[in-house]
Image 1 (cartoon, rainbow, N blue to C red):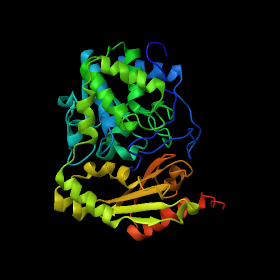
Image 2: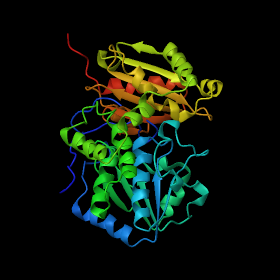
Image 3: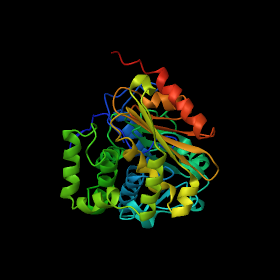
Image 4: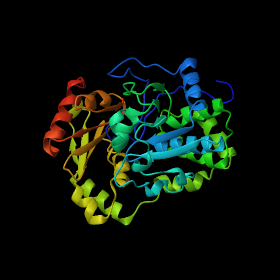
Amino acid sequence: MPGRPEHVAPHVDTETPTGAVGVSAPALPSPRGELRRPAEADWQAVLDAIAGASSVDLLAHVLPDGDALGSALAVGLALRQRGVDVRVSFGDDPQVVPASLSFLPGQELIVPVSAVPERPELMISFDVADARRLGLLQAKAEAARQLVVVDHHTSNAGFGTLRLIDPLAPATAVLVDELLRRLGVPLDQQIATCLYAGVASDTGSFRYAATTPATHEFAARLLAAGVPHDAISRRLWDTQSFGYLKVLAAALERAELEPQAAGGRGLVWTWVPWADLLAHGVPPEQIEGLIDTVRKAAEAEVALVLKEDPDGSLRGSSRANGSVDVALACAALGGGGHAYAAGFTSHRGVAATVAAFRTAIDEQSAPISD
């Protein structure tokens, strides 16, 4: 792809199809099908759809992270430059932009779910691996005349009418960068800031194995456009409320280490009850990164964090360091994701959910030989 380096490394990211950052390895086939990168015909079909639309609705997944919301806003800003009637939304109620992403430009484009047409002319989703991750906007997306899916999750089953799905991309923002190049939209500071938030989020600030020379070249172009990378990094990783610290402390106090799990490779897990969030005034999206603290335990190959929602259901986020495919384990519990970063939703209670997850990772983990 001339002009912008092509990213070909496998990746991990901070969310999964059902609510799920770790080290990646060579990309594995999805449990639901073979990996396939976008072909020229796929790109052209999306360009034609955009050219023929008088209005476009751009969607991030529920509890949006930097890659989802940054990608949607980047395209929103670009299409607005071209005179397109554009809206950005995500299907949460209440609809709240995480405090860590409040710096993102273009938020005046965000509209509530009710402002999205019942049958949109053209809808584009970003970083959404499963239609259920659209939340309250799923029905409207499925009713759209055309639904374009822009994503990089290995577990994406291929919903929508047009797809730009590249499981080898380190972030959805990389695909958006290529889309904007093909649209002829130059990178300005606002668009570049949105894209930087996306690629920095999903590479763990360029620390994960998904980060390649091409990833740094991409980041260099964004910095050249005037991105305030130091301020963004502080907002994404180094700023939390005191309430979050209290929730984190309680979660670490609950943490359990099971050295014999995963064939002797070890499992570390904990959970966060909804009552803790209420007690300390912490919104659910603020604890999405808690898994990155838990997974630091040197004695465990696999980490799991269960987060309780108001209805009592549990959103599981899991990570692995190299020899266990947690996407397969989470698929057994109805979820999915990447080989080393995946998630699921459970209605079984904490003990039963951990037991089911433990069984799933044990079944695909050969015992460590002496």
